[in-house]
Image 1 (tube, rainbow, N blue to C red):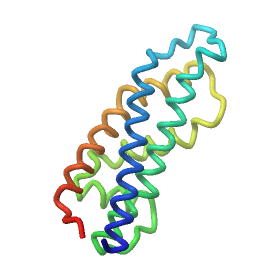
Image 2 (image 1 turned 180 degrees about the vertical axis):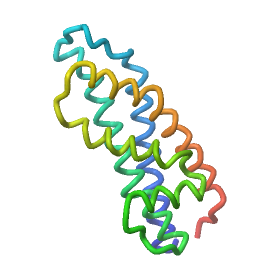
Image 3 (image 1 turned 90 degrees about the horizontal axis):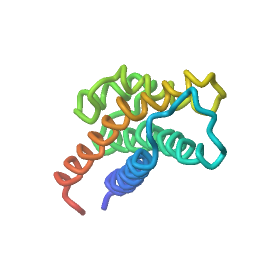
Image 4 (image 1 turned 45 degrees about the vertical axis):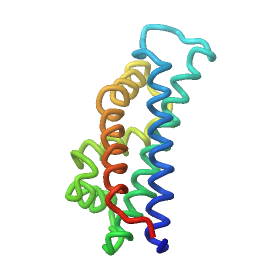
Length: 150
């Protein structure tokens, strides 16, 4: 396999595993209740979801999308927005602005917020971002199926 093909397949596998972990965490959490005082044990599944979401976005944007650019023979994008625009044109993502929001939430997760803000982060992950990641995983599988194994 060529270096670009190998990098593409490796980053795709990492991405699909990380998206699978997000899905698993979603199955172990309910909607976040901002009025409730959670114990440390009760917060663990939410923390896992947040960490797994962060990882999935990071792997998508900084590993897989870059690997696609290299594999496609494109110069590496200089900005995140340029890379996301390219991924939208290639039909990997549905909406650049959604991915910019995902990136913003990924960056905000590590900070402490008021309960309402924490609830909004989990609601966004559950309702908007996770479906986009699941769709991306399917598109990655389809894309890889069209690439011959060297």
